[in-house]
Amino acid sequence: MLLLHRPIIVFASVAMVPADAVTQARADRPAPEVPEVRTAATVQRNVQPNLATVTLQFSADGSSPKEAGRHLASRVDSLRQALATLGIPRDSIVNRNQWYWWRGRIETVVGPVRYAPRSKPGSDPRFNYPVQDTTYRAHDAVEVRIRDLSKIGAVLDTALGRGITDISNVRFAATEVAAAQDQALRAAAVRARAQAVAIATASGLQLGRVLSLSTQADYADRFDEFTLSGAVATGTEGREGVATVVVQPSVPVSVTVYGRWELVSKP
Image 1 (cartoon, rainbow, N blue to C red):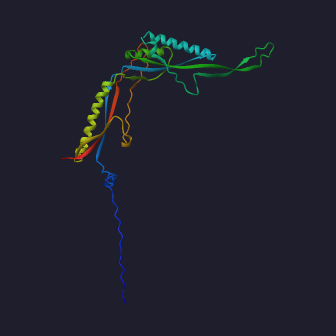
Image 2: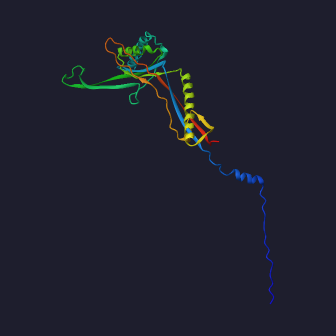
Image 3: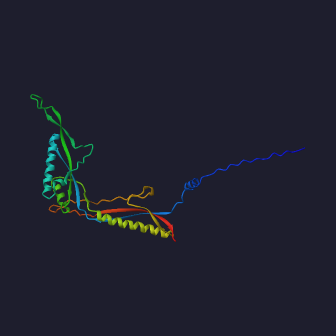
């Protein structure tokens, strides 16, 4: 018996891959992460204020809205004239209307019920009829901007002398802060780098190139926000014959620098 052996044929295919495709595949691989250090440093400088503002709120009554508005305007004009004698110019006294939404600029004040005799001739005087008076109250507020800080107490005393008791805190501000900001910025940058160097040294590494350096936080870094704090001072009501004295605080100027550096091995 003859056994016939059939030949086994194997087919093979070869795919030619371009060299640029191999390079692209390697480029798509995620690059190893480079260790980095992130720091934030805040430096504050204090400057002397050169501007003070105070808000005065007051009102005036009348039997009609027109009369209440007229009385209010007269009161504001009297205040402007009194402050002008202190050297406060009229353009430094600006309107700052601040009234509550349920009260409005013109408030209606309904008086208690009273009983008045009937005025009709021949009516029985034993019978009276109810009467309810209505008073209209106009509200206004002015902001006084004081550039001569030695006159703050005199401004408060003038307001109190005219029956104005709704007086805000004295708000101090500094308009010339460029030099202080530059000093704080340089100091904060140096401090942020010093912190990064300390971290790198403790890790047995050293700082590499700067990845970012800014005064605005990268929210992806989850840095806490730093806000500028303002200075507020209040004048105390003076005793009789004693003028009000307001202590002028310094105004803080704060700058925060956020930095990121690459960490590399020591040579």
